[in-house]
Length: 424
Image (cartoon, rainbow, N blue to C red; front, side, top):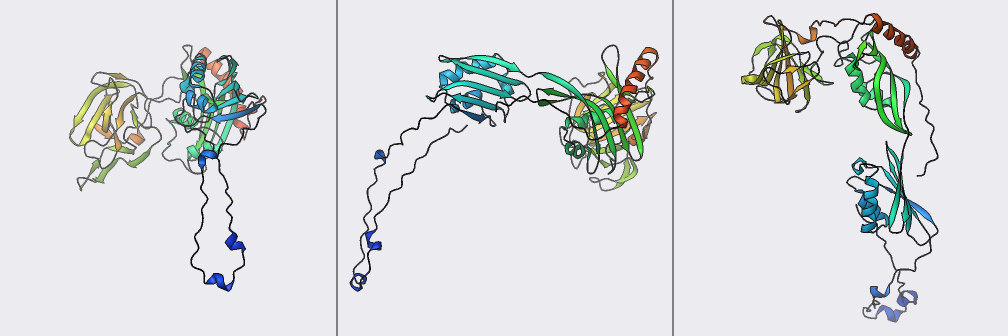
């Protein structure tokens, strides 16, 4: 962090009598005059006398790359003072939490010495420090954390991401929505006019937003079809999403092995190969994505192969039943513990997008084989787990009755936060 510097400027008036005098005909014939430059001695230009300042406060902003010592010493503490104050602050909070934009308010007494310091940590609260000799007494004041249930609704004009950002929400909610409806909604084919509503709890520390809890209920209208989702937690604390009737949304297979990417080539019986330069069948779906993008298994299963082979590059083959295998081609590397015989669960990361084998660019080639024949992954019919029953179903219906009005009357909502008087 750069240190503030004071700069002083001295204006030295120059006497220019020749310019002020009248010019006579004789002066026009006078040879070139020699200008006399006064000698400046900067050692004689001392700083102005300091002006006595009243008690005042100065706010310092934490910048990228700053440490707490940088900020405190810039404010005026000695190296010793900032060291011991940093130790006191570290007892209350992990100082690595300090982020650009956090504020440090220093109060100066009439002598110009710092007597109190207030550290504002976004998403956590505040720490007060009061001078006690050459040390400071530190008092942590963590903000009260709370959750506020709210409904968010938006229509898609350009993308799901933009729709949520324009509604004032964080990108985190994009992935939650994809996770809820990934079995039913084709997020690679969203259209202008698609619409969604979400009931979710927003988390706050004081007035600072911390993020979201799990989605409690949601509707998503895509291509003229409306899908509903309601959260239910089992006795062991695991949560899942169900339709209004109690049928689980989770299917045996995910629609795609990557989250929120794009399809660059579809299943085809005759496709011109960009490297081999002749037509041949394309048995999978290509998903374009940057190298290193996580690849998930689309269903529970056991790894049969994880290695490298010819044009397929690094690939993984997973068996999901006696009839169905899935393939993941052109990977850059495998996830930890992915080897022959490893058991995987739907959604587990098994590898990462690459460009190995016959590939013109980074992508994943995802394939599905049933009884020895290739299937179009985008048309794969999936098996739905058992629905809720008995006590679980009764509790679920009670929750649905409470949440449905929130979804049906969804509209723009404003979350009201009671703010105390700011110190900054």
